[in-house]
Image (cartoon, rainbow, N blue to C red; front, top):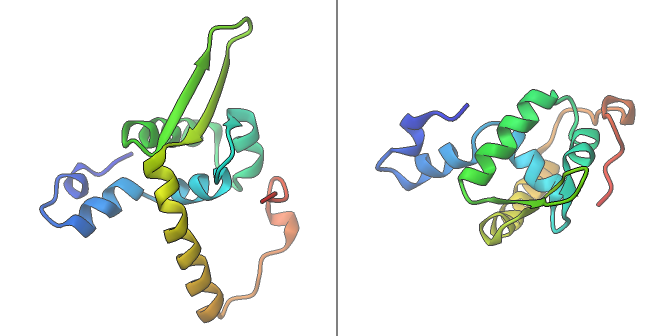
Length: 121
């Protein structure tokens, strides 16, 4: 759930944090990268997220203009997600965060079994 106090702040950094939100949004953006993905694919790849929270986060990312939802008029209905221009512009920032973490990380790496599905970049 979005914290409107952050999103409506006078401070650009605070508003950015309000848009980026919690731990899930950057993870979803990172997993998607430049790919178009369906809900089931995201659910399989994003570790430790419930389907309810994934649905909420996808809706918020779409509302914030970071994600595009593509609904096809087919039977059965098909929906795909991809990053918008704004979302793609966030990818280099995530790369810097990952590089920072690698440089200063002191914790041990998690086991591969801690993930629902092995990441595929």
